[in-house]
Image: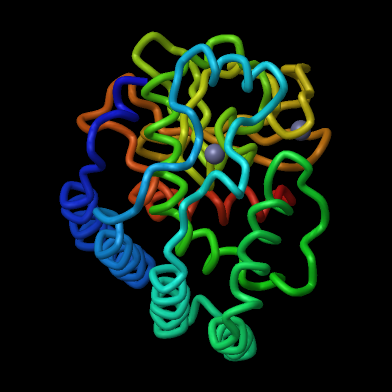
Length: 278
Ligand SMILES: [Zn+2]
Ligand SMILES: [Zn+2]
């Protein structure tokens, strides 16, 4: 939890991304895109406001007993910042061929319409949260754009909440702050597994074996393998066929850095998908 309170060290993340790029030239385009996204997020980060939720430990602990804490209406959003970020993220992704031309047009239509924009962002937040359902057609293909554009708002809210909340009682596979799914995990020097939310980057402790997506606890139905350098582990569930990557911090020279580790593990994603996991 202490780590969540520290200011985010983007310059260090950018340094690591540049290092990754020179070590693994195949990842250069993905690393460059990630650097651009971090730089865009930094431009608005300093002026993002605290969420409109009472930041009192007892109050937050009470809310946590009935589920993930952060509702869309708690976010104090400057829509001109969101519009700027959505457009800039989409343009950067398009440059790196990480977004289809048709989806770029969808982004343009949404950001041009001042009434539609908040509706689409709310729809994204609510459909990828605790009651996650199938993706509404309106946001299909735009999930990454919206995620990256909303990241400064969600991490600001998560940091503020986690600074005043103990999450030990939370045993769910989804995020205690926003209800999102984990996108990465970190294995701590004490061999605990902390899951990291794919939306707000909150971390919470979770059983080491159990699949966070379907809660399958059967070790014989979890396939696990490590990256060649031993820095990352992947656990794939043979029940729901989903997988989660973990950064093994036990012998690491730096802390986990989700924007860096998501790029560094692209070869692991490819290996998992080759084996039929998603
Ligand atoms: Zn979250
Ligand atoms: Zn599963």
